[in-house]
Picture 1: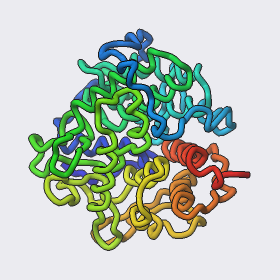
Picture 2: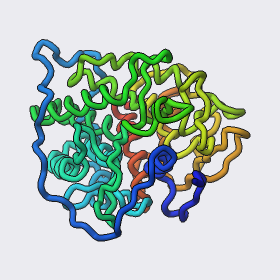
Picture 3: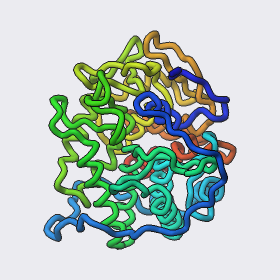
Length: 397
């Protein structure tokens, strides 16, 4: 099939599209009848096996800064909640057919904790449990479509969504002392650790983008990885609920893969990478640095990790902070093939410059504009939160 198919401009610019293309390349296409289903209201239990970690495994003092209340009841959060969170708690991806996905639900939960908004957290978590926790295991189906029946037509997970949700639940449990959040975080973390992290790979731990479709058994160039799925700040906090996994080794392997994935004259990683031998762009995918990969320096900065050279290709690409749009780059020749023009995207160069040089955020990026879609607005808020958690001098008024 044509992996470079184009959608209308308004439907581009979201990480979910990249995952959809990846799944289309690895799995049989799902078919469904069109309809307008109502959103589910029956919510599965919030607690289930496995049991919480043993009392003798407390949160470590070096687990990284806490997320709670780093955003506060900011006007940007109030606007986000009004524009992207439905009454039922569904996060709406406004540039991608109004779908919802586990990534968006995870980001919404993280933002609610950062805002100290437990009521909205409960709404988002309730909808997530009712509508995405429909697999036979403890992971989440990755996409919910309002114009399809069933609304979940593909039962595969997206590992970054699972990571974000487990992390958000961990932060919520720490912030509000709710045991059910802790147990839910643990069961999700244990499950994706068991099913999607290949701890014994010769490269070091490999994080599969999903349970199905990306392994060496399923692809001749497998396993496939996506570096934006290494949510480094989450791996610093998940030992609180799942201490039996070596999360530090996963951080190290992500940094190693990043350093080995400097492709073409730009030295940038592609979205989808073959980790079969020496990392290289995956077969059958455009070799682009695009919607997913722009999150890599965000997660590095948020975790406070990496060397200057890890950030260097991104800084070179984005240049000064006055840039008004970000390029999507063909790594074969280093040329821009498209542009991300919504201003929220430029918060990523801002947090990169903040982390590496202590450069203050431009005044124009210290508030979030309302006239943007879900993805750039979310990235903008996440970058501001990362700065407040790790580099507060960059956002002092």
